[in-house]
Image 1: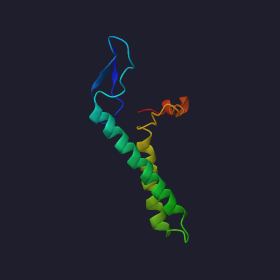
Image 2: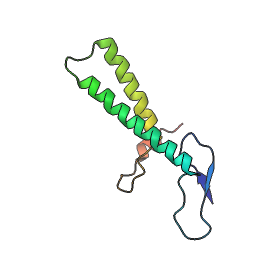
Image 3: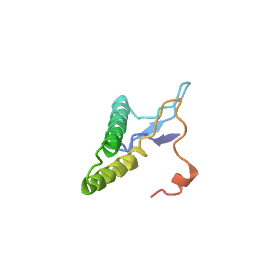
Image 4: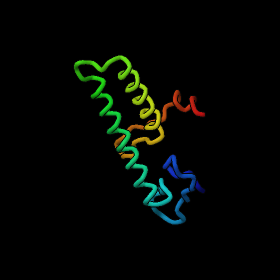
Amino acid sequence: LTASCMNPDCSKKCKWPDGRGRPPLFHDRLCHEKYHLIRRRLVAEIADIDQALERQPRPPSEERIFMENQLARRRWLLLRYPDLSPAAPPSASPSTAANSC
């Protein structure tokens, strides 16, 4: 039994362990580290853009439109990097699964 690596940039497969133990989400440690590095960066950039959009005085119209576009891009990318912590709620809802490519 195999499944795709959780890193969206990776095309390798993870294999269900033969014996006991937790099945892997990533095919190797480097892939796992890259996933979390990219996810942390996206979360930080989203927070920075949100703060910039809320600052007073408000950004000029052209700058605000650019920042909102960048925010939408980062949120779209973050959908591919769900929070894998045990306390995180499931990220895929039926409505978003129906919008797949």
